[in-house]
Amino acid sequence: MDAMKIMTEGMIKENQPKFEVGDTVRVSVRIKEGERERIQAFEGTVIAKKHGGVAETFTVRRSSYGVGVERVFPINSPFVEKVEVIRRGKVRRAKLFYLRERTGKAAKVKERI
Image (cartoon, rainbow, N blue to C red):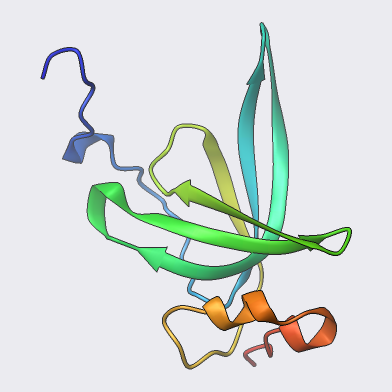
């Protein structure tokens, strides 16, 4: 167990952003390339939130050049710099996997007012 670093309750990030499934978010991710570090933004719709507590993750989906791209981010990862909510979505599901079959305007989520 010593060799494996286990995430404990003390490693949970404070001031986590409040976002839900269906929201459009911009996730700033720290990327290490050799000696250099940079921050890359990944913007898309949150289609799922999993687990809870320490191991909580969320899946963000976007369409890039006509190809659907999904990334799973751990909320408490040190590589996730910040999560900005761009717009709030109005959905009636906990998981939006049905968006994977849709393209164009059909893949949009209505905005919550």
